[in-house]
Image 1 (cartoon, rainbow, N blue to C red):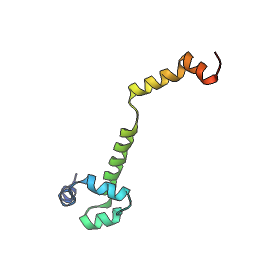
Image 2: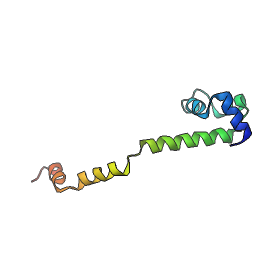
Image 3: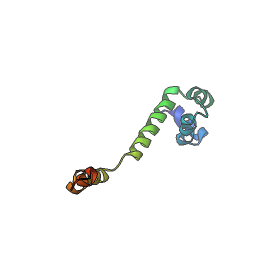
Image 4: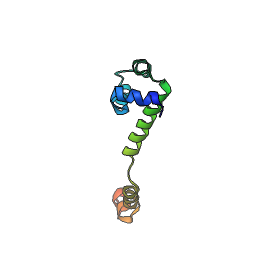
Length: 85
């Protein structure tokens, strides 16, 4: 992180306050860049990190996924789904 970005964080409060505003359309990267004297690439990097964090939070854990696969491949669940016994 650059010194400029660090100083901007103290002005903004922190990046997590700015990124949601951009994602919700309340402000743009260009406006934030001008307001906080930051390069747009730095703000875009924060947005990318935020999006990756959201994607990871929405993923199922491997343990949950194994349980799901076990349920759909068990003979009883296949019989129940086809209506045949």
